[in-house]
Length: 244
Image (cartoon, rainbow, N blue to C red; front, top):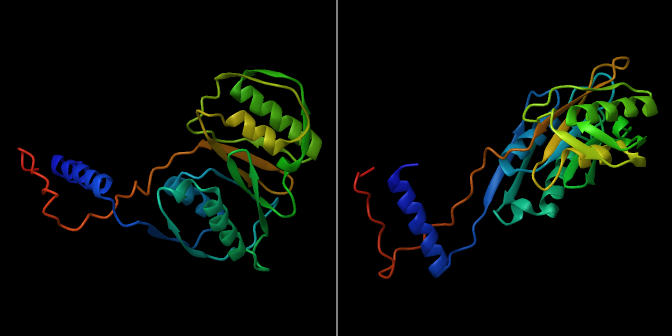
C-alpha cells in the first residue's frame, strides 16, 4: 500500500471515529457454475472471503449432476462473524441444491464449525469409542479414522493436510460413543487454530478420503466506512513527501 493510500485511509477512519458516518454494508454475489461439487466450491469461497469454517462431506459413490448456484447476501464487518447470517447464507445454498437431480444435504453446527453433510448419512455420524490418545496429530487422526472404519464398515483414510503439522504431539481424552465428527472437530480446533475438512467419496468399495486444511481468510478485505462529506472542520489529508 502506498504512503498516500495509507494517509487517506488513516484520515478516513479518524473522520469516521470523530464525526460518525453512515452505516455501510457490502452486497456479495456468489456464483458457482460448471463445478461437479458446487457446494464444496461455495464453501471454499465463503471460507476465503468471509473466514467462515465450513466442512463438506459428500455421499458415497458417484455424485449426480449438480445445479449451478447463484446467491446474493449483504455483509458488514459486524455481521460477518454473526452465526445467524452464516446459517442463513448456507441454508439458502443448500436449498438451491435440493432438486431431484442433485444430492440432498443438511447443515449441522458442531463446535465452531458448520458441516455440510449428506442427508443419507456420513461415516462421521458414527459414534466411536477411543481410549486416551497420546502421540502426534497424524497418529491420532489415523487412529480416529481406523475406529470410524471399524464402527461404520466404510473405509475412511487420511488424505492431504496442507498447513497442518502432523508431527505435533497432542493428547486427546478418552471418548465413549461420541459422534466421530464431534471428536474430529475437537482434535483439530482450538482457540489458536481452525481446521476444516472435505470427506470425498472414492467409490462405493474404496470408501472415503479425509482431506484437511487450515481456515484462512484471504479475500474480501476489511471494508472502509464511506468517506464523510467535505467539511470546513475536516482538513484534507496531506500528500506524502514522496508524492506517492
